[in-house]
Image (cartoon, rainbow, N blue to C red; front, side, top):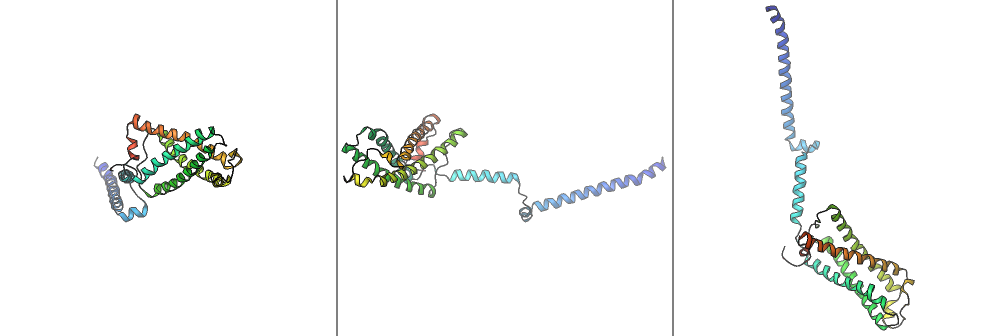
Length: 242
C-alpha cells in the first residue's frame, strides 16, 4: 500500500499542478479580455459594440425623434392645406359636374373655364410653396391607423395626391397653351367644340377622376381617425399651441 501511494503521488501532483496552471491561465486570459473590453479604444478598433447598448441607443434615438416631432403642423402649412382643399373641391366640382352640362356656345362656359384655369394656376403656386415647406419645416409623426397595411396605404395615398396635383398642373398648363385659352377668354377665338383634340386633355381628365377618388378616400380616413379611433387627428391640421 505504501508503494502504491508513493507511485500515485507524482501522478496526483502532476494533475493538481496542471489543473492549477490551467485555472490560473484561464483567469489571466479572462482578466486580460475584461481589461481589453473595458478599453474604449480596443472596443472601437475591433468593432466590439454590445448589442444591448446598440438596441438601447436605437430606442433612445427613436424616442427622442418622437419627442422632437411637433404635435401640430406649422400654421402656414395649415393655411395652405385648407385653402388648397377648398380650391381643389371647387375645381373638381366645376370641371367634373358643372361644365360638362353647359353648351360650348353658352357664354357662361367661357367664364367658368376662365375661373377653372386661373384657379388651377393658383393651386399650382400653392402646391409649390407647400412642397418647399414640407421639406423645410418639422412635421408631426405619421398618424398610426392601428394596422400596418393602413399605415402603408396612408403613405401611398399622400404620395399619389401630390403626384396627381403636379400632373394636373402640368397638363392644365399644356391645355392652356395649346388651346390658346387667353385668346378665347378675350373673345378673339371661338370656344373649342372638343378639348380632346389636344393631347393633354386625356391626362387631365384621367388625373381629375383619380384625384377625386383619392380625396374621398383621404376624407374617409380622416373621419375614421377622428370618430372611430378617436385620436383627435384633425387637431394636428389646425391652429393651436404645441
